[in-house]
Image (cartoon, rainbow over all chains, first blue to last red; front, side, top):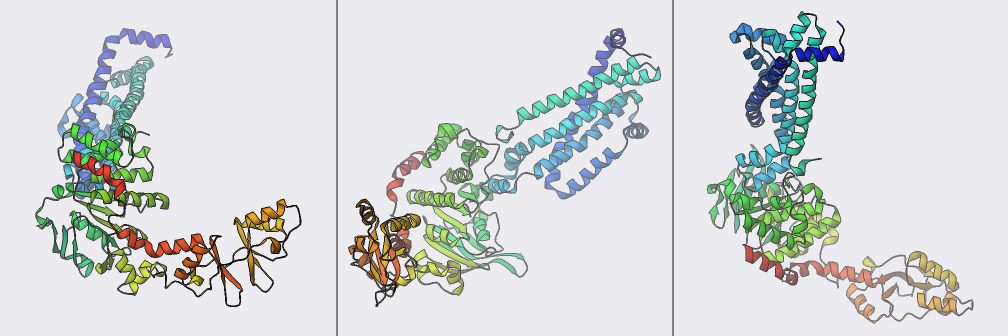
Length: 218
Length: 397
């Protein structure tokens, strides 16, 4: 089937309502939600990992393991484990994939804080909590933010696979398009997903810069 | 003020970082702990603010056993300056300096006032520097801020762990001078760790020399220089440092051994060139046997050249009235020097053969070296500079 700009446009007009629905679903349900959940778990875990060796070893091992399971296989495993089909297994899988970059970056960011600063902080009479909040987290912030950004971009791509288990999102067009050998439909899913990944990367990059304390900006 | 009672720190059984240390530091005293690396000086320092806990013994601050003081609380009352400076890069200069005040819940307004006063005290314009970030400052400036940060809460005690060790020699010297000036007006109790004996001698009211976790000798810089307890200290201080009075130092030890000389037959122009080349304003005229004949000054040479005649050094020179022999003392030399109208003193032996030259500068250097530590010990030495900063500190603390 020939794909032209106008045929693509026609495909879009045909299903514009569904297109925006899927895009919103893709972004909110399959990217924002799992990444936010992953951040909520991985940042505290990364902080604990930087303080406790055993937490570091076990949590990083777990997150690494998740990352090594092929994405479709992970979806299959989740269904087999009783997560059912639809959004749920997809969100869980994306959450698991997002853990590693955020966890690793949080851990590394905190571990990389200069020892001299920690000694100065301790010597000035800061408590461990004060050191964490006033010194370690602000200094680790750009690295943690970079981890979130990586996770988000990975999610946008992986989320297209969610359609295989009925998870919705732009993958729906791709999967249907592939099944119907309708390249226009496939591209109607694939192109916006790619654009979303690029845009998200750009916006989060800007956000990272603006939220970085001024003294640390390069 | 600070008292160590039988303090030991054992890291692994049998290896003492510090062994049965007893030391009492008076209020307002600047005590320097000095010794080679691994002598336990930093461990000793860090036990005062409980960054390191002693294995045995007790440490008292104002009579209170610090084991029973909450470490964070204790540290907020003790200034702490480290070699790596450790300013927080994500905070402005003002935030860095005011940090301990913030930990102590001092209201922001008061904090800002105090920070500005401190910045002004060491010559930083608050308007310019308040909102700068550490990386915008040079190393020397950063450590000045590091010192201010330690002073911010007006602590009685300040611990300094090789604070100037990472700075270049010129900056280091400047900061040492500033610290001395500051101390002359603030009279803090300062414990200062260094491995640099020169720094110790320059700054200390009292020096504690340590080796292998034990105190080898405690004394004022002068006591240490005059009566080093043993060979270790003698070596550590360095031989040339030892105090000798001016009547003990001989001219031969400090004279310039190869002064600029010329034969009486040398022409005026050549003599002029020679002086220029060596950047001196006079030349000693010596005959072929090495006997001193006179001194040719720059002015003499110029006169000779201006006269247009081909005059020689022998004709232009002036007689030397004051000379000294190599085995006379520096004190005697100083007396002759006072009478010499050239600001220099040729050194000749009994036969009149030139051996060397004493200049005003070399003589003054020697005398200053000999007298200097005693002068530096005088606590009232430099009070003039500090008076307005006392007021500043007083108003705000």
